[in-house]
Length: 287
Image (cartoon, rainbow, N blue to C red):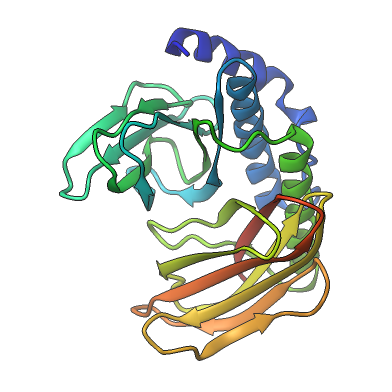
């Protein structure tokens, strides 16, 4: 799909995005994230509807980023397969996407001066690549998000994505009603991760930095979700867990204290569902 067509799509989506996801009212971080999430979800579905793109297993990422900083994902990409990464931030800000190979060489980018960067990329070989979402310029920190798609990826109804995001945001709001809370703002890390999971499948995110303090992790799934489990472990420390929630329900929550300089491993399991499930997981700073 040509970029000028995508830009037209994005302009339309910006005008109608408030109907795509329910905003977590009365909690400012939820308002900001929901607005950006709505644009990204609608953008992804529009691209999917006009092409043979579908969502990657890790389909959505969001972070609160300061100007000049970025969050990143290092992941395996398949040689010869075409990927599309689409970012979103509020109007009047400049957001970029840069893709690096395992040697640190830049292989794809969208660094134009706009708030909705889009990168189409076909790796020449299978390997590890790093995708950076950089807030190039803004008057202050902003919620920035990105959808990750590939040719022949998951074909998901938009209501699956919006429902999972809505459930996750409402659970964040419930936490914020009890204690002061904001999304994780550790430089380079993600505060929200969206993943597609088959029944009884587990997604693992390693080498994560949570900074120092009390952290709460919540997750929400779509209408197919029956039982979600979460676990937080210290990387390199065997199987010792900081906290786990394996109760037979779809409302997992973790509560743990983390330290700067240490790395953590987050596990998200679709313990039971009626099919492939979209799970949105959020990491909150409640200090």
